[in-house]
Length: 110
Image (cartoon, rainbow, N blue to C red; front, side):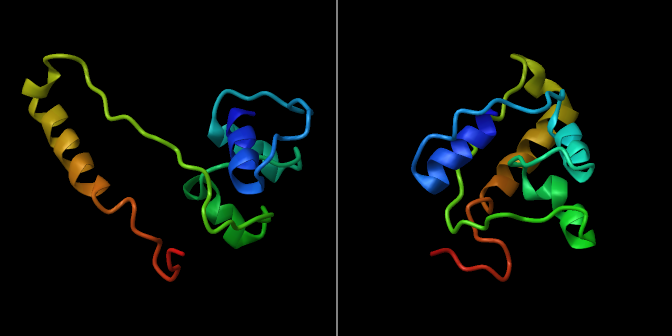
Protein backbone atom coordinates (compact mmCIF):
# COMPACT_ATOMS: atom_id res chain seq x y z
CA UNK A 1 0.00 0.00 0.00
CA UNK A 2 2.82 2.53 0.53
CA UNK A 3 3.69 2.31 -3.18
CA UNK A 4 0.03 2.70 -4.19
CA UNK A 5 -0.42 5.67 -1.83
CA UNK A 6 2.74 7.40 -3.13
CA UNK A 7 1.68 6.80 -6.74
CA UNK A 8 -1.82 8.14 -6.09
CA UNK A 9 -0.51 11.24 -4.30
CA UNK A 10 2.11 11.97 -6.98
CA UNK A 11 0.03 11.28 -10.09
CA UNK A 12 -3.45 12.35 -8.99
CA UNK A 13 -2.42 15.01 -6.46
CA UNK A 14 -4.60 13.71 -3.64
CA UNK A 15 -4.78 11.03 -0.96
CA UNK A 16 -5.58 7.46 -1.97
CA UNK A 17 -9.19 6.55 -1.10
CA UNK A 18 -9.36 5.15 2.44
CA UNK A 19 -9.43 1.46 1.55
CA UNK A 20 -7.08 -1.20 2.83
CA UNK A 21 -5.32 -3.95 0.94
CA UNK A 22 -7.34 -6.91 -0.27
CA UNK A 23 -4.34 -9.19 0.04
CA UNK A 24 -0.94 -9.04 1.73
CA UNK A 25 2.01 -10.79 0.10
CA UNK A 26 5.72 -10.79 0.96
CA UNK A 27 7.22 -9.16 -2.16
CA UNK A 28 6.48 -7.44 -5.48
CA UNK A 29 6.88 -10.65 -7.49
CA UNK A 30 4.00 -12.11 -5.49
CA UNK A 31 2.00 -8.91 -6.06
CA UNK A 32 2.37 -9.44 -9.82
CA UNK A 33 1.41 -13.12 -9.47
CA UNK A 34 -1.70 -12.15 -7.48
CA UNK A 35 -2.65 -9.51 -10.06
CA UNK A 36 -2.41 -11.99 -12.92
CA UNK A 37 -4.90 -14.13 -11.00
CA UNK A 38 -7.38 -11.27 -10.65
CA UNK A 39 -6.52 -9.87 -7.21
CA UNK A 40 -7.38 -6.24 -8.08
CA UNK A 41 -4.94 -3.45 -8.81
CA UNK A 42 -1.55 -2.30 -7.60
CA UNK A 43 1.45 -0.25 -8.61
CA UNK A 44 4.48 -2.30 -9.65
CA UNK A 45 7.68 -1.53 -11.56
CA UNK A 46 7.35 -2.07 -15.30
CA UNK A 47 10.39 -4.36 -15.17
CA UNK A 48 8.36 -6.86 -13.13
CA UNK A 49 5.25 -6.85 -15.30
CA UNK A 50 6.31 -6.03 -18.89
CA UNK A 51 6.03 -9.66 -20.04
CA UNK A 52 2.54 -9.92 -18.49
CA UNK A 53 1.49 -6.65 -20.17
CA UNK A 54 2.79 -7.84 -23.56
CA UNK A 55 0.97 -11.17 -23.20
CA UNK A 56 -2.28 -9.49 -22.17
CA UNK A 57 -2.31 -11.07 -18.69
CA UNK A 58 -2.23 -7.57 -17.14
CA UNK A 59 -3.65 -4.26 -18.31
CA UNK A 60 -1.96 -0.94 -17.68
CA UNK A 61 -4.51 1.42 -16.14
CA UNK A 62 -2.50 4.64 -16.29
CA UNK A 63 0.60 6.00 -18.03
CA UNK A 64 1.58 9.27 -16.37
CA UNK A 65 4.24 11.52 -17.87
CA UNK A 66 5.88 11.91 -14.48
CA UNK A 67 5.36 8.96 -12.17
CA UNK A 68 6.53 8.84 -8.58
CA UNK A 69 10.22 8.87 -7.82
CA UNK A 70 11.64 5.79 -6.12
CA UNK A 71 14.89 6.63 -4.42
CA UNK A 72 17.41 3.81 -4.35
CA UNK A 73 20.37 3.63 -2.00
CA UNK A 74 23.51 1.73 -2.86
CA UNK A 75 24.83 0.27 0.39
CA UNK A 76 27.44 -2.22 1.47
CA UNK A 77 28.98 -3.44 4.68
CA UNK A 78 31.92 -1.39 5.98
CA UNK A 79 35.18 -2.89 4.80
CA UNK A 80 33.62 -5.01 2.05
CA UNK A 81 35.01 -2.74 -0.68
CA UNK A 82 38.25 -4.73 -0.46
CA UNK A 83 36.34 -7.76 -1.82
CA UNK A 84 36.93 -7.60 -5.61
CA UNK A 85 33.43 -8.95 -6.38
CA UNK A 86 31.77 -6.27 -4.23
CA UNK A 87 33.97 -3.60 -5.80
CA UNK A 88 33.07 -4.80 -9.32
CA UNK A 89 29.31 -4.72 -8.59
CA UNK A 90 29.63 -1.31 -6.90
CA UNK A 91 31.50 0.16 -9.87
CA UNK A 92 29.09 -1.33 -12.43
CA UNK A 93 26.02 0.01 -10.61
CA UNK A 94 27.53 3.48 -10.24
CA UNK A 95 28.40 3.57 -13.97
CA UNK A 96 24.94 2.32 -14.98
CA UNK A 97 23.20 4.80 -12.69
CA UNK A 98 24.45 7.68 -14.82
CA UNK A 99 21.83 6.70 -17.46
CA UNK A 100 18.89 6.06 -15.12
CA UNK A 101 17.43 9.56 -15.53
CA UNK A 102 17.25 9.21 -19.32
CA UNK A 103 13.76 8.61 -20.75
CA UNK A 104 13.07 5.08 -22.01
CA UNK A 105 13.68 4.52 -25.72
CA UNK A 106 10.80 5.79 -27.84
CA UNK A 107 9.45 8.08 -25.09
CA UNK A 108 10.43 11.70 -24.69
CA UNK A 109 10.76 13.41 -21.35
CA UNK A 110 8.24 16.24 -21.05
